[in-house]
Image: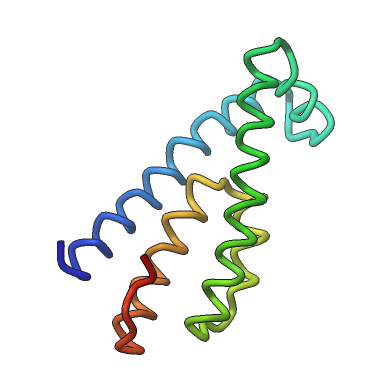
Length: 116
């Protein structure tokens, strides 16, 4: 798959991650009468299944932030830190494909090979 094709896929996935997660976030805010971080976190632990998914995603977020930080340094990507508030303020489902899009562009711009 070409770099431009990968960039399109990553862009589409980022937009999908933004729309899908915020659809449910807006539903939560509507039902709660606004946004409360404590209520939101409490809702992620309403049962064992919700807790499992929540902690699963927490591990994914930590791994993503560590890996993306090291990869951004390797590729000399500027403004990498913007992904941190995007990850927690919007969603990992948005930030991760966005990073992959930016990474793909950096690889293309730098003429570097992708790491295995």
